[in-house]
Image (tube, rainbow, N blue to C red; front, side, top):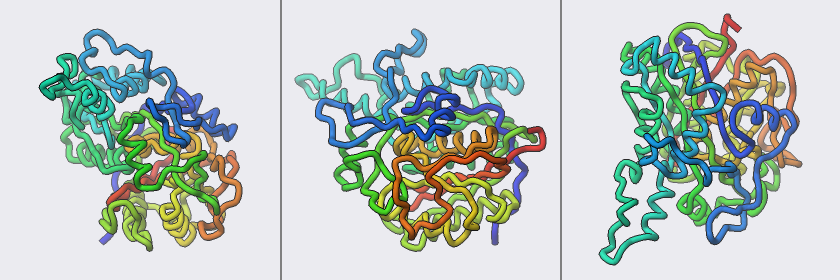
Length: 398
């Protein structure tokens, strides 16, 4: 049986920081101008010949003195992202309304602070131990991000880290909806942060998934992904609002560790459940932010799914050519783009792509378009068949 329709949740604040800049306005400008944030890889001592979406200035950021013990690239990016678009102030106001114990924190990441752990292993002492300044167990853990952000925001409610590869920070919305609906909390901060590190760059390169040039989602000649880093957050509360979470769907097809199911069964199940919870038909969706990594199989399977389920006039695009594939942060960044599409009436195009793969369907657009967006769908598909689809909508208060 399909899931029942859920009451919408208002999204009262949201923000994203990526290679195109800090906050929503630089992101919106890049989307309007079809301006990619990718650059030739300059990360690490021996950079791979690829292109990346790197956030400028992270090396110079200093955390506040009371948070300095959390220092690492990932937590610095989280701190930078929290400052944008008045987000930290919005959470402070919610904390006063509900109390710190009634606000959940649910964050997605795939590597968390592993970049700092990589560094620590290059500094082992004669006994094979971390140097004294790296003996920070709260940093060298996958839960470091959530613990850091919880302390930075002064929250005391449930705190979760979701790590389901590239669907991580999409699935945070589903967890938040359940906690709020069950009455365990009154609001939730959701989001995700992932930063570039050796494990990511060389790991994906070992899988032969990294492109030597800027990624070209859904291009007939696409040849791999461009990796990036990003931070994004949203504040969810009960009741109607200008922007709303209407539905979500989660599915795991467990077909293969790194290859999607050839018929997109898990992705389609997630789509069906998201539409059912939103009470919408596929024809109602005005904009689709596709997962669109520019890998051969992902684009083929997702493109075929969208082609068979949506009208040809639906505007769909991949925005990974702007930011790179930000892995555990991809879901929240693309949720923010979907919310901007609704709020500003901008449907992004697909940068870097020149000749669309005809097998991927007519819905994929290369150029941005303006028009009313009432409902937007955001797809996030991860390794191991972890799939998530989110439906956002324009609320009555808009």
